[in-house]
Image (cartoon, rainbow, N blue to C red; front, side):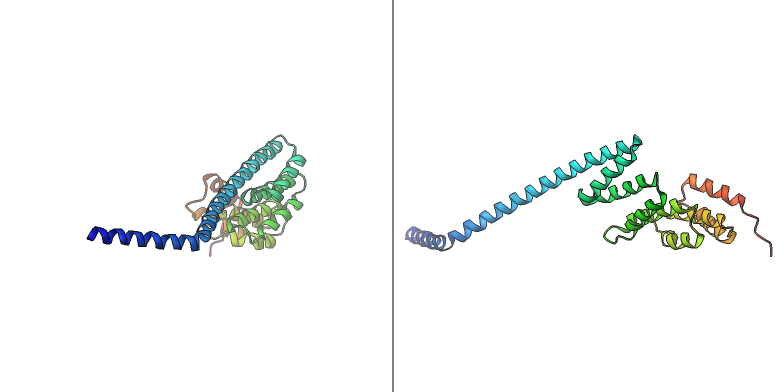
Length: 217
């Protein structure tokens, strides 16, 4: 008797499933097709993004080769093309390299390009700091200490990635301006920072030796 009831229940379930399928099959099929299309689209997007990145990497390497061959005009054009068309990571690198190419013949124009990068809030603070320091490096021989301080002071904090170079540039600028107090301030920061690179520390010590001795009170 129980087997009869089981067969009846099974028949009822099959009948209910058939009714559900007849009613909702179009939606089930459409949903499945959407899932398949979505997965296929995502795979396609990943493929094309990887292809674009590979092409940009090859183009970037070619531009670097032009630069190393002292073909700065061609290299600049290649980097500018990448900065306009490449994926975001390569665009940032290309902008920095394009500015470096300009620096080989027009430091002031290159400093302006670096300033534009430093002012771009769509990029990371580390990239902004790098651009800021590179611009200051091009202007250290011509800009007033007050301008250098305005440019670099925010990059000299204890956690700033490029603080060592920023401090050295400020020390050098202050020394050129005969501001021994400011020069000594930055040189002391370099000396007291345990993470200062050895080569930079040596240069700072050499500059410190050129300063007049501290007056005794």
